[in-house]
Image 1: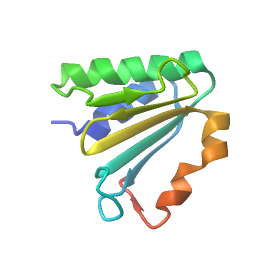
Image 2: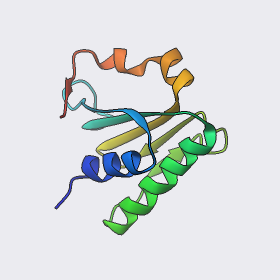
Image 3: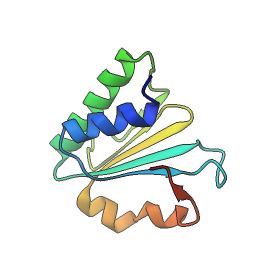
Image 4: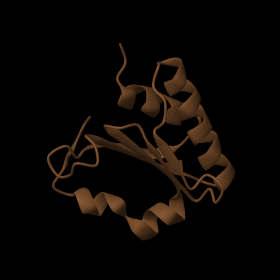
Length: 109
């Protein structure tokens, strides 16, 4: 049985997202156990990735608890309880560099 992060990562790969990272943040925050972060080249690709994640997660029996940023499309956050997904345009990701906030967290891969 694939995990949430497996399903999300595969959906991102299928839509050609780049620089996909799965970060184990369970010991650093109560926001979740894993953050999945990915980059895209455009708002259209960001939305396509998010749509694919949502579809594949629903097929696996998981529904998104909260989603924000879809209209803008430069950074969309999806909350699946223990797994939080950040899909961003590359320049937005470089600007915010949220991975630096979790430098002490280990990669889940």
